[in-house]
Length: 392
Image (cartoon, rainbow, N blue to C red; front, top):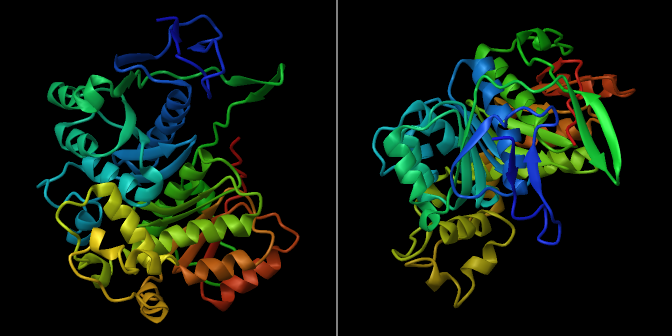
């Protein structure tokens, strides 16, 4: 297939629209079901690169949940605890494959942002993974292949219109890429920087002890950032992104945004949230919204008279700020990655509130000394990887 005609571009008024290879070669994809759109393909191709690199860097199956050309979640296929199975709504599915665990983690870290996602999988989609995808609101999936039964499950979604794309895993693009903006063509070499242990050698803090699981999580953070709209910051814990901040003009705002998401991920595991008495008829998205409001600043909205009866069987107790802080203080070994240097130590101060102990960032700020000093104050270990990962 030389080209694929799209219904329209980013918006319905942007016509005509199509995708094709500039060198005249065949597209490296086959659309097995549905009719993916312009933004679907942007998410699919960025997501595929991300999971392919995660698999290469960690040796584990990988998945990502993409929304508007940035990942809402990314993870590798480590087993799920009973608590994680419950907060990701997969505790009723029995044993999950490593790939299914990866997608459950990627989708579940930030369920609000992942609603209506485009999925990328590093490995052939199996039945276990397809069963999770089947029950979620999603636009489509890209993978190197599909088990026959898994493909039939996916093709039945959205009244038969679910987008299923198969990509050739051997495909490699040209080393120079082009982009048109305002009728002007930009040309640059592809960002082929390899994220591996060699980028993690320059530990600049007094604490130089970084365990292997933290190094793995640093690589996950950096690869995720490589495909996240800048400025971007990523918090990682136990093989999965737990908070991604994308596209913020101020880095500390990005750090706060991602930190708030990481906090929500941990708060959802608290007994107070796990025991919320939802009404039997509530849908998955409504549960997610109610939880987000309950643990956030809008908790009084969901607990107000006339509102809680629509969500809960009985009115739950308020989750106080003191209780939330005590629960959050349990986490003290998360990883934080940044796609560019921290210009001020306020980023480290905010990271500390979300249990960060290990930081990886390029370095190169005129205030590096102040940032290092702040890390030393909290006993953090920080790596200067020396590579900026802007993505636009």
